[in-house]
Image (cartoon, rainbow, N blue to C red; front, side, top):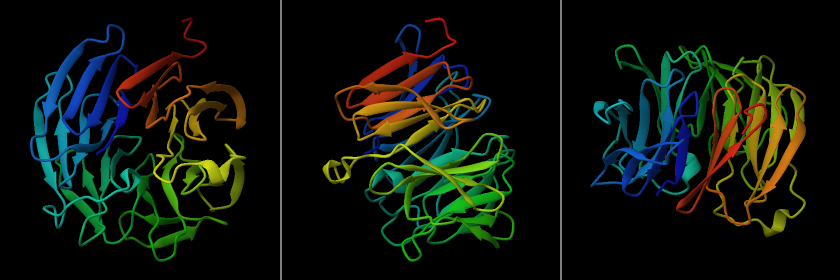
Length: 297
């Protein structure tokens, strides 16, 4: 089951997804605010909307829930095609993500019979489009472009959301376990399927610009490690998982390393708040909070 986390925009609340459902905590006090159980299937991934007003999750049945974080109430439940199938490992092939403007939600799942990626309009939760056999996914800040990959080509492609027309394939791209557009939409970032190295492309042309987070001990990395990263919405910081038990904090404008933080234990997920001052890392049953400059803490 998923062990993923998401901070709301100011970093005051943390959502945790696991085999029991979703737990919402206040980050200042550590107090449990709400617990949303999922008795039939554990939750794989969770994500706050850009304004923090709603929370999206996906469970092991491929069901997407829209939740009010202030009350813990379930507002909507969206179901995939073949939504009664089972989601398979690995975690990175199942997820939810909002567009930067909050107008679209995408969800993808590696099911037993299909690999759907679906896009919803968040105003009325109507289904915008379904793309078969493309996973994982990422959506541009304006919701007009989708980045996808699949088992056949194992390359990163950018499509027009409305027409599914191929715009370009990212230069020298390989299969990725997690990727995202930068908050301004200028860059596309992806973490390598096997070694956690992060590549940066020009999101308009697919030209390869930068490769960071290189791992010298590639052969020693566990096969089931969850290689992920987190970008602050103001575009200043990037947090990556190094090896599998260290955090790297990068300047997301110059791609220079600001800080390496060894935790000494496996990191399942990482999330960062809007202005890059609060970072949370999930490890087993423990969440580490790191306060970054200029937070003053």
